[in-house]
Image 1 (cartoon, one colour):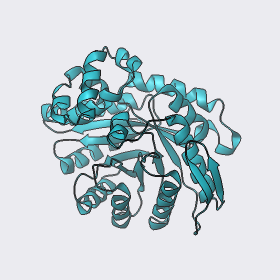
Image 2: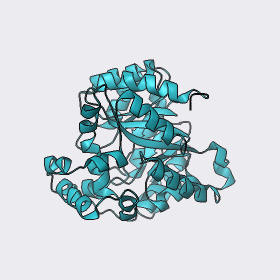
Image 3: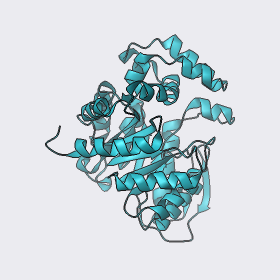
Length: 332
């Protein structure tokens, strides 16, 4: 997978145009980020399905707390039908600050994600489901047939990474630095060691680096544009991750508190150059290319996530050229 994530922070027609451009420059997967404060990702994906012909499409990552998992399974099945079989489900637990804003308890995230896509698979297979666990479903079924589709788990912590290797088709590993991806690959491998035969062998699992990328001919502008996503990453990062990059946990905690209080400007201003280096791939095309090549030493594929750059349209074209060179077997 050489994918791109588009955030529906602009009118859906514009997002569809970006997706068309992404397909033209060689991306094979287009994902839409899923945050309640942006436009609805499935409406955006529907427009993307109509505007494109070949790319795989899906949410990254749909949240089974804010949407009931049975409803989420139906939404994704509808997307599979609307795109002529090009859909995938990216699913993840989200972050505490967002759920806190909605009054939702961040309860047993690993179980919630696992149970959600297990139930989805049963529904896609035409089964009637009764489930009682982190959520309830009684006599639930879909009234239409749908082909099964791949499930990618948005993961960063050790347990979620292991679970993805054991049960999912792939992982969207929330990391941009080789050190984090090397550690993540080891955790995924632990899950793959226990993988049931029914899910296919380890070679069929796709570990995708879900990297925050910001690219521009002006490297400093690219780094500045990376501040918002880095703030959200740092604000929710576990202390061992912060320690790996010598990031002050108190400063990171302060960023998380700003975000939880809606003080976004303060949170973004508190991001340091060291945080950008650790949690984003940001700079000129040459710098981004080198960092993506380093990432691909520890991942099967890559999804270039938001913000992409200060000028999104220009960034898509620049990234298309960079990823084309990265995917050539003799280039790395």
